[in-house]
Image 1 (tube, one colour):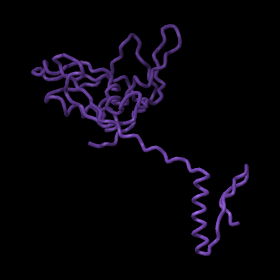
Image 2 (cartoon, one colour):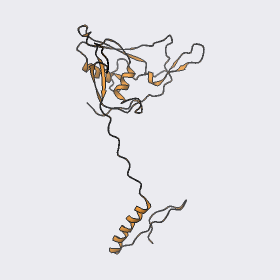
Image 3 (cartoon, one colour):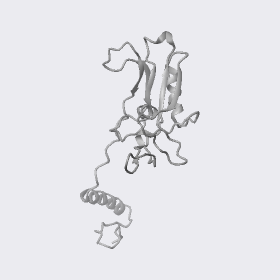
Image 4 (tube, helix red, strand yellow):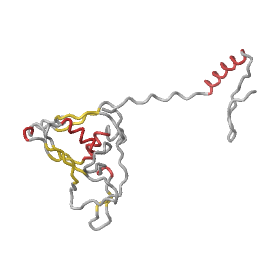
Amino acid sequence: MSTTYPPYIEEPTGAVVPGVSGPPTPVLPGTLCNYNQGSTDPTDGWAFIQVLQKICPAGTTFSVQQVNYGPFQPMYPAGETRRQWTLFIVFPSDTIMKVFSGDYGYLENWMREWLGYNDINGGGIGNPGTWALARSPGSTSLYLIPVYTPTAPPPPPPPPPPAVTITQLDADLASYNAAQTAAGQPTYALVPMAPGIPGGPVVP
């Protein structure tokens, strides 16, 4: 499996929910998903569904439907393909006591777990991990559900080197000039940079 994961980015949207007696209410980008129904584009939600298919029992069926909870249907801008897709997973009847069947909620939420390490990590820095059928942490339920376990985040980058001080520069220049003098070459001096005047080494 590739260790390169795209960042999870909540792009702006013009989607709104019609107002009851006032102006339309904007739809938050986080409630929308870039899955296109029937698509097999690996950059969208279909790639995630393929990941789940690998861990589910043979005969499991997947269904992605646009479901809107509430009396008002969101209105989407022309040309915007994102929707509030809901993922349904139905397991074979002989496994009903081992795994859960039914509405698994917004596909966007699953993709966030898959692509984002966690919300406090910028809401979208990709992080590899694995899915498995298991009980939710701390649950005593008989049912198993797809549980995502991210790998440890990569180590933080090394701290930047300390800033070079004037004292260090003077010492380095003195050592360099000693070698220049021994070789019969010109020596150099540091000239403080005045406002508006370019600075740099000069030949005395």
